[in-house]
Length: 161
Image 1 (cartoon, rainbow, N blue to C red):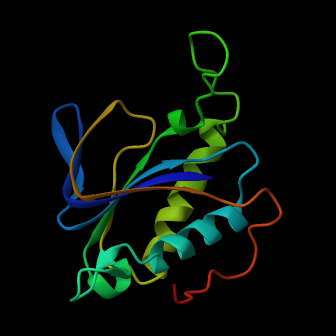
Image 2: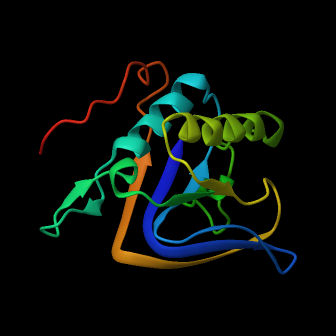
Image 3: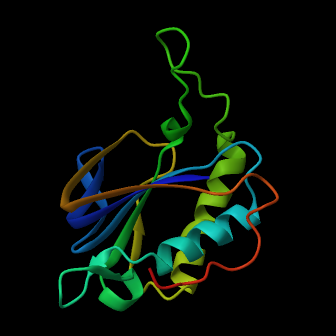
């Protein structure tokens, strides 16, 4: 599972010219489900995102998580995060999970973010042609990827550093 996390002042997603999801200060998550991903990857990623300290504290240091800082999350499914353009001129998407398996995993990921304590989680429309608008705050953009299959078990701890 891959996520491009962006700290935002605001973000929204449109489908057919209509805003279907958005957030003010918080996180925009572009979410890719890879072939073979499952519950362990969903749980690991949601835990990592909920506890990742990417918001400034009173001293301006990135010491606060989304749970501590407040704010919302906009999660947008994006299979193109699994695009492989190392060969040729057209990316290959063979490492992306099939839509019929990826959509329920994406929905479980969103539910898991909520169960982690993130009160406001909105989404785009899975599989739709979406236009995403954002104002990256910082800018802060972080690439997250679950450990290799079978290693994404256990909890994500919040250690100092």
